[in-house]
Amino acid sequence: MAWTTKQLILAFIMVLTGSINTLSTKWADTMKASHKNGEEDSFNHPFFQADGMFLGEILCMVTFYVLRCITRRQRQEQVEMSPSSQEAGQFPKYIFFVPAMCDMLATSTMYLGLTLTYASSFQMLRGAVIVFTGLLSVAFLGRKLRYYHWIGILSVIAGLVVVGVSDFLGNTAESEYTLNGIITGDLLIIAAQIVTASQMVIEEKFVTRYNVPALLAVGWEGSFGFIVLSILLIAMYWIPAGIFSGNPRGVLEDVPDAFYQMGSNPVLIAAVLGNIISIAFFNFAGVSVTKELTATTRMVLDSVRTLVIWLFSLAVGWQDFQYLQPIGFTILVIGMFIYNDLVFLPFARSRGWINDSEGEDTEPVIPPNSSSRSAGSFAKDSPDAAVEPM
Image 1 (tube, helix red, strand yellow):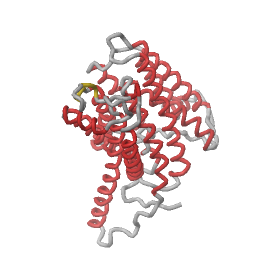
Image 2: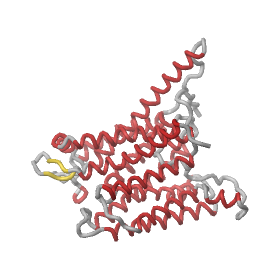
Image 3: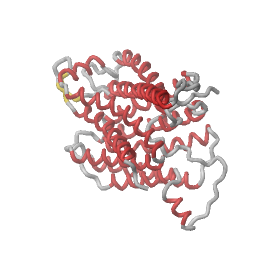
Image 4: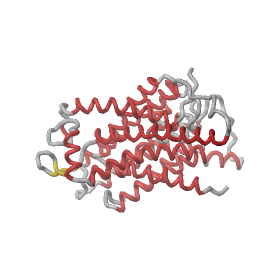
């Protein structure tokens, strides 16, 4: 079945904005601008950029209410009666607080790691979330992993090892990154996936019992994350950070210095806005792709996004070609597809090569559409969908 024009546009927007989200953050990291003391250095403000990302997630909530207004107006024009007797119900907003805190910690850690390593490695290493979510789901959700889950996990681990080795071998004397920095950055990104996995397990255990539209859920998590991280940024202004500091004062984050650098190099504003706006469009497009097409398609498109980031990084000279990286990426993608019981095993079953019956409670621990942060964990219904309390 051929894709419609709308579906093609949504798929393109998802790949484009998803790529822009990582690339714009890395672009800002690579740009130089003057500090308040007059010294020129790289824009190294990971926590400031993480706060901007939460601002972008808040835009998802704005989008939700705009779409709901449009839906109600269309319904009112089509039916000569009151718009609808079904209003959105109430749900406890606090259910998003703990997942938002996990999101805040994971995103800040990943952005810190991104300042130390390559953008393509940043994107590929995020695949480690499958390993940790699978293990945590067994421990806390009582899930039973089938054989293909374990094969997928082992494949992902193998892919992560290959990607990590490619970073070490690809580091040359001319590289702007040190070997210690790359190791630290890669480990921070992988460690952040433990927090992201915890977020997914918490959402599944406590949040998905409510029928919360995805865009609204992302918006609430973004609101909590933005408020708490904004408050923490004040404390970070006074906390010494040593080698993890990217500002003259040597503190964890210096927001006034970030704004000063943006003023001294206005191009930085475009990079920061790219991060904020792209995450909103990416979440919206991701939810729409899952609704219009399939979760499998969304997973394929997310893999294409990783490929785009890698090719762009090579094209602009952010990193040199290392033959192990595409090999590691391929192994990662294969592992993800096997884990989610997509393509390979269904094809083998259709040919009669394997005959495995599904047991109870064997659905994928990570749904195939969970690549877009928390949006994949919630209902993907219309903007005017009712929210049923427990």
